[in-house]
Amino acid sequence: SRLARIIGELNHAQNSGTFLGGKFDQIQYSQPLSVIATVFDDMCRFIAADVRSQGANEIVALCLEKALGSQAILLSKFLPSLSNLVTLDSTQSTLSYCTDSAESVRFLFCKTVEILSSYSSGPITIFLDDVQWADPSSLLLITSLLERSKEN
Image 1 (spheres, rainbow, N blue to C red):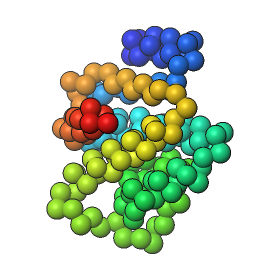
Image 2: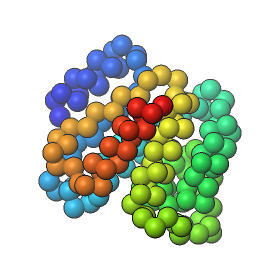
Image 3: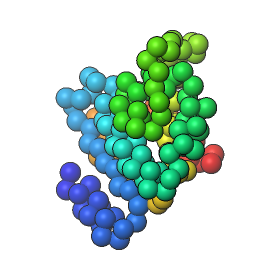
């Protein structure tokens, strides 16, 4: 959207961190988490480049491996660029012992964002446009991320 583009340009002009944006629409409504996954996949790519320049690759990889464990492979289905940050073992089981797989995915997303944002060299701004078209899973994930950010 025009607003997202303007905010992104201002952010870039001020060199004030990373700006990520996504736009929900009616067509993508049937694909749960597609917009959110795209935004956070971009985040993984930016952070991977950022931590490489800081020489912190191994530290971030260890933190992610510890937090995500064998479930990292499950999250990589949503975030293919996660493989730039952590070694994924496709032979590991992706079965979740959580009774609610949607809750498990939300938890994994939240842990990943928490870890990645702590290793970013600047603030991360996420702009989501047309949230009225967001699917219920995306809305729950956004709510979880906001609640966790309040706690931290």
